[in-house]
Image 1 (spheres, rainbow, N blue to C red):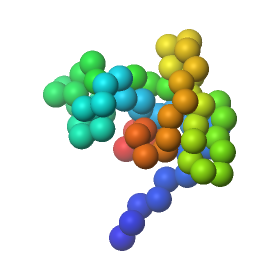
Image 2: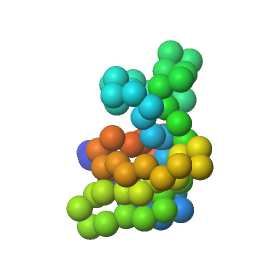
Image 3: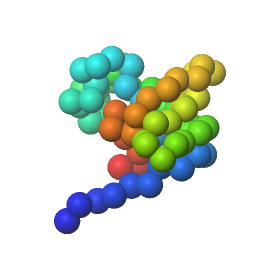
Length: 70
């Protein structure tokens, strides 16, 4: 069964700090320092997001972020 997550503006997400982060699980001891928490401010139909991370706007695709709490 495929688990689909809908990411809408206002959702909290894990945003990778480094490219290698996407191969790790956020929120675990071994991945400390690889992920930041962000809030989605805008989303488009192609999966591109504008995320507020540490007071800075970042533009990222949904493939590279993880929902917070999963």
